[in-house]
Image (cartoon, rainbow, N blue to C red; front, side):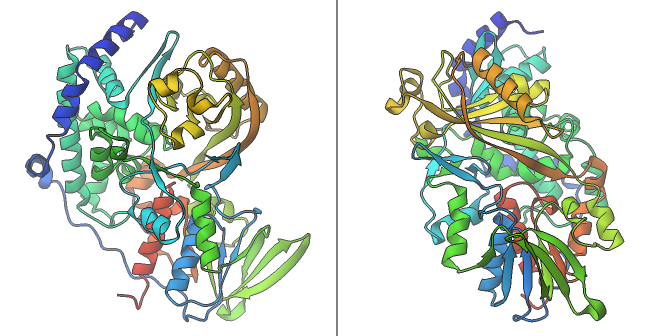
Length: 530
């Protein structure tokens, strides 16, 4: 086991070769990437194009969308663009945005759900610009805490070198490790392009059986099998910390859907100025984006109106949607249904056909808790306002603190000495969002106890005032074998067959760009569209 002294020595060595890492990574160009592809080219085969799907029969059909989160609001907006005139959105909560929940506290927006953008968020960037939903700001790089006693933190690339040297004792220098990481990046990009080619959006066309068999494994096994486990440190920050599962548990397909070549190459680019950061945040918060889309398009959203049942009318005459409003039960007829909440949860509301019910019954999810809290700045502080606690993430302890973000300092890009010394920006109180992940639905008292212990032992602060908390059902997904069987494409094949579209994270991936791109895919494949 690596001792604390060894860790400190390694950190010093890593800092010494940091410029070497950047120099090596910046040499990755199109020629380097293309030279890697022929080695695996013979393993790939043609993907199956997405089929055309059925949708509403008429632009004047009555369409009910269940859920006013990102996928529901975006779908209503896109349908209006396409000329559909009778769309109504039902939302159980009293706000628009779903997991894009932004709280204002001390005149600062705090993201309690959706937080970041990255290079693949082109559709989101278009929406932010179109609806004037605030500025897109650079997000400071996170500090990766690898030990709490003594407190040791480093950058993502430095942590990648540390992990690789720990896993491969035969690697004797950080410079050698940096070279292996570079080779792993080049090989991963080549593998991704060979297996899936280039495609539009989050979900690639259905891979052939040969390709699916090559990803019928966990993401960790995929990395090891292809000798690219040098990427584990980068993936810890880019995937696992975001709540998208441990690499020894999730399907390789999920890993490769999220960690695209564009994202991977963007994350390892050298940062000269803040504008070089590829991870961004929104100045007004993500909730403002969906509110602006709804307001500027005059979308018909019924808040505080939970849908209780959706039943089929006789002779294919549509659906009866029953919902609550102000304590009363109402019923309304619709021709077409679009449902966005987790499909497994909707099985008690909509009488899905047996095949559909079977598909959705296989999903499972984690719980990501976000807590907005005031503290002082404590004794231990990293160099940036964003912390990933790798020692807790790797330990997989239920409800442990995975991350922390000082919202004010993040929005104002306060880092290094400006953050570590005194009170950043003259703030006497630090208002932060803390992240805790659980496989089972957590008990609020346990969450508070573990958060308080973390602040006391890691940040070395006794001052904690919780302002608000959200426990999210997070990252609904399928098993490794279900993914390799093609379940996401099986779901796409049934879109529209019973006058229902299924949208949202449980049929694609848990991110706003994923659900937006899935909506666009549905509309591209709608019969009658080019």
